Image 1 (cartoon, helix red, strand yellow):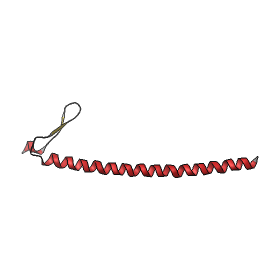
Image 2 (cartoon, one colour):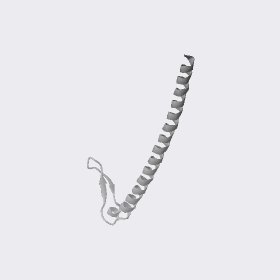
Image 3 (cartoon, one colour):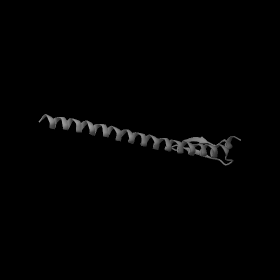
Image 4 (tube, helix red, strand yellow):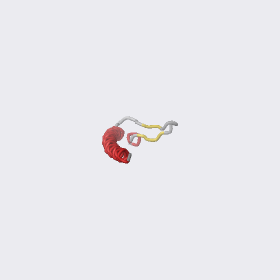
Amino acid sequence: MSTIILMFIFGFIYFILNQKEYLNKMVEEKTHNLQDINRELEESENRFRSFAENTSDLFYRTDINGVITYISKSVYE
C-alpha cells in the first residue's frame, strides 16, 4: 500500500514540475508576442505622428463625444 502512495506522490510531483515548465514556456511566448505588438504599435504611432505633424492640410482628431483632442500644426501656421 505504501508503494502505491509513493508512486502517486512521485507521479504528482512529476506532473507539477512539467506543468510549471509548460506554464513558463507559455508566459515566455506571450511576453514575446506582447513585445512584438508593442513594437508594431510604436512604429504605427511614429508614422501617425510624422503624418500629423508634417501635413499641410487641416487634420484633427476627436474623442467619442466629438470633442477635438488634436489639431495639426498647419492650423497655427
